[in-house]
Length: 489
Ligand SMILES: [Zn+2]
Image 1 (cartoon, rainbow, N blue to C red):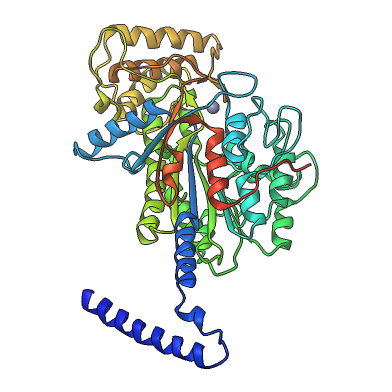
Image 2: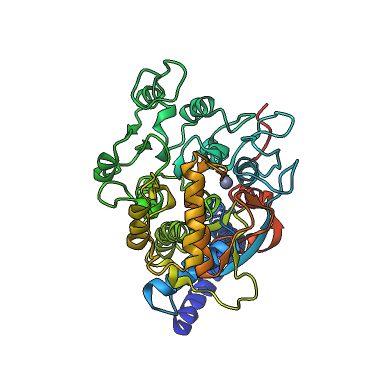
């Protein structure tokens, strides 16, 4: 290195002397700039700028995932693998921060207001999608990246019309207008769309449709040359992305299943979908911005079901792992940000005077509560609790509690509104017992107002550190990518 430099500098000296003589004896030439210091500085500045600006950007959102959910999944992973050093990829990222999540009109937000904050950098009211409280639509980072000519992707385990993906793709006064939101999504021109929820894209006459009109939004995608995989997970799996491809893949009529209930032979994992998104968008000349949501962590939290939460956080983390591997191959061009939109369930790791957690008690659980179905046959139900829920040695007190809930169910009561729907009092009691055995406690079937942790790696990751508000995520991302987040009208 030293020798090379010495040789180079002697060549430079000779060249300079030669040029000086030339400039003194003949008319000035434009050859000066070849050796000039200015051009060298300029190219250094340029390299610095490209190093500052990521080309490939991942925003991972665990819906309903705050510190408790990340920690529960981390302990669950150690228990499951028997390896005390096992760690979630998202918890290994070098930059850490916290974000407040409150909405404009309430301190306890929902996925619409929180998604809008993360997507646009603006606070809004609970329930609103991509709009300010006064109804003005605001541009999302996905729309801004699309307008700038970057590749764009939105992936979710929820219906694509659901609050979080909708916040990046649509503008509506209410999250409860999924058919209108679907029309916005069909107009979005986003390059890679995958998740659940084809029921809002097909005409009302089609099987499983939830539309009230005859609009066929799948045709809108087809007319724009999208590769479409509507209720076709196997076709999606077999698909090999080519340069210039656009993908519309609502794989199920409604949400994708919980990780605990997913059949790997028939339904791709969030990690597999994310990898397909990477393989598609990496062919784009101008880089990409991709939002990936682990949406069902939230529903598992609403149901107060700790094993379902832990398994869905792990599935989400495996998707983060795909991005992390990509980052290792493109470390100077990639940014990964992992955060949550709010906390769900008020999950406490520990309760009463117990100084312990027994996370291993969650390991035998084979399904979500959705699969537990008490139909009046008490013996069969207790057998299924033994077989699928690890409840092999119920105490008399626990059994009495479940029987009391069975009495309510037998009387036709659906007591528990766990927000996404109504839950059998029997399932609610099972969730309580399972949680208590593990040392866990829940304060609510809804959301809470606690802050959420954020971790990040790669180009510009440091901009996301510190105790900030969720609106900063979109603002920092827009800053890094030179995107304009403004009012649309
Ligand atoms: Zn929720």
